[in-house]
Amino acid sequence: MYQFKNVFLVLLLTVLFLGCSPSNSTNRLGDWMKEGGKNKILSTTAQIGDIVSEVGGERIDGWVLIQGDLDPHSYELVKGDSEKFERADAIFYNGLGLEHGAGLFTLLHSSPKAVAVGEKIRADYPNKVLKKGESIDPHIWMDVSLWSKTIDPIVAHLSQLDPEGASYYEKRGAELVQKMDGIHEKIVHRLREIPSEKRFLVTSHDAFHYFTRSYLSDPEETEWKRRFAAPEGLAPDGQLNPLDIQKILDFLKSNRISVLFPESNVSRDSIKKIATSGKELGLEIRICSESLYGDSMGGLSYLEMMQHNAEVIARHLE
Image 1 (cartoon, rainbow, N blue to C red):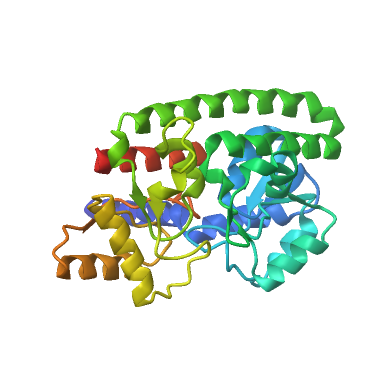
Image 2: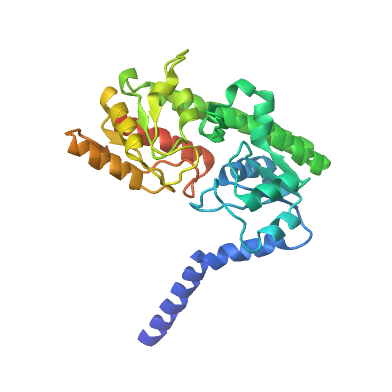
């Protein structure tokens, strides 16, 4: 009996391990790659894929190209990616310069099946899209109210692909807009609870401009950019010079900031250097124990990710 229990335990652990292993993801991709079935929708990022899944529901079969903590800015095609593009009935991507890896950029811009949701927003709401210098800031998902504007083009394209499901997509899209509007207002309310003089943010890279404009600034504030700084640019590259460090230290001192927020998929080297340099100057600077999500979602849904960011920032700035 004892030996039987041991064998049973080993078999049970094996089944559990296989169920949680990467091969399980591989099997799901294998199913997605099969011919026939539901319309196959490929999204470049999890932020897009989450909205597509919410709108498409049971009528689509979705897959995300850039998974986990991989950097969407520099993602390069790997073996099997070209086949995913060929198999997909529609492809949704961010655009606005986010997916600028050479191979991926070329494939997206040459595919008639690809829809850039960010470019749709830029065309419809040009004053809402930010720039840093000559570069467009692609991180539009960091404002829930702006990201909800992707729903209409997604509904329209899925309806064109599947006319019989048009009313289904429209209903789900309208429900999602309402849900996102509610979460947006919830985040606004939560962060406005922080005194205005404390609503200043330093993160690893420039992914939080939209977030700052929508959630950390005062109503009708025109100089909201003064509330945010990051040592690395729109696409984190890990290169930091003494001038970059000094600019952040000046920002910390002038705004009496004592906490730096790391991002889940960005190296902490830059903010560690800032914290060390600040301490050498007698500044009290700490690195937040909780990471924010900018370019990746850490396995959370999009709305969970945004609420997580708001709550972490609120707790550590109050």
